[in-house]
Image (spheres, rainbow, N blue to C red):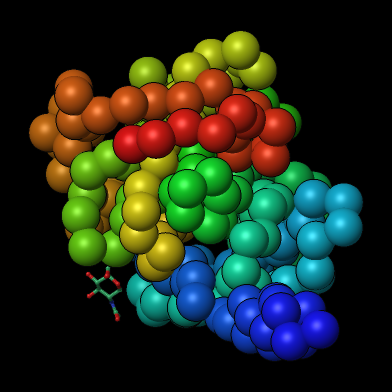
Length: 190
Ligand SMILES: *[C@@H]1O[C@H](CO)[C@@H](O)[C@H](O)[C@H]1NC(C)=O
């Protein structure tokens, strides 16, 4: 009984924990809204406005799996370039990637993602197309981090805080299949 109530207390504490964030970094003067699409069974996340040249940080629930896309002001809400995330997954690892699978021609929204304290590993492109985003479902492009705060750049013809793509790719870093970012992956150890 004691064990059960302890387990319930721990579960409640875990569910209430907003220990993850994504900071959206606008790289141009366009105002945008970022829309979130949760995986089935995951909580909704309210769409967030990211004003041109500004940042907006969004709290992400513990263990959240889903994706997001950016819509420039005045445009129809149609999913384009996706940021895909699986927070606090196997072994506490957070998986993330940028996916061009839905609309490879959306070059004005989601650009790149990386863990906030380190540019390595980075997913996505400063200038699309590049070799670091998903184009086919069986590409191997999902990145992994033990960090729970991610950066996602939006827009800009050439990134204002971006650096040469080749300098930010870590040749030694493990990359994963898309299964991991959509919640289908097997346990891994980094
Ligand atoms: C937005 O966040 C990025 C990345 O952390 C940082 O380099 C930049 O200074 C921030 N810009 C603003 C306007 O806060």
